[in-house]
Length: 462
Image (cartoon, rainbow, N blue to C red; front, side):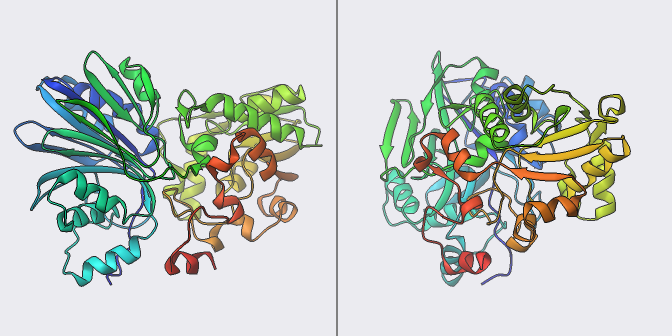
């Protein structure tokens, strides 16, 4: 088998459909713009106009797709994608949607998630002579579609979906129709809605707000939604076995979105309150790491009655620090992105709230910044439990030996990053806040995966 590493995706997907061709491309641009937080590496669209046309490139939506904002070409259907930056592979090659021509005609597909049995599927396809153009696991889906036995496209799609394991929220274009697919576990969110004959599919409800389209509901796990001139049709392909990714609520989704039928903002405030209930430490102020810690820090401050302060300001144009592996560059990026306000911090016992701790390198630099600004005590509080296991469903978690919570307990961790103390939200508290916890995946915290893992993934855990 090829040594190329297959890449999963924690990304944003979007689809628009109208039975009568209309200017959908500006809507696609603004809808993807609202999903920019789900992926900053590449963006693209595929739309049906005299066949499938595809536009995609590396960069932000506003850089790569800006021309769509004024494109009034009447089209019937369009899909879009924002790609999350992960390790390995060419960014340009892995930009989506993937658009192919095969024995079934033209197909375009965009994918949010990660196919957990990708190694077995690729091995099988290599033996059959498949030639891969990307290192993205999404490409496997189109290879399987071209090889599926049923002549009917929808029957072929169902046959392929039965071969896939893991996380896949998909949007597809075929012969002008739009298909929206969600895996039986519903790992990643996918919503739909309609206004004046225009149907919208999107990863988060913030896209519906942006486009002033009412949200009708979720695509059910194990379901295909088909949009065609005959209207919207539901096509179940598997029994739902919900295992929603709780990390969507903790970190990835936008605070103004609903995800898994829950308000992201309210959920984050609740886990902040739960964290406060578990914390005996006294502090002079509660301060978030912006922007990911904002809502939880508010909940924490309200529960403890401690003043909430924005002691760190964020430069929103500095890029993402975790894309730089070299420590010196990483520190520079953190200093470019986050700026302490000395007047707020000096001489204070600071309770610093962030969403989670992965490698710990950013937190170490942050603690150093706060010490330089005169903080008397620094108590790092995380609104997620300790991350100890890799994710095989589309979150870019590093290998186990890179996860700092596998190497240090909270006390040792505090010494390692220079904080006075470190406290994580207990897993049982997170499950209480989640309420219907049996419908969620907590595998990155517990190691209890919702499906049987293949040998490659088991080796990674061990």
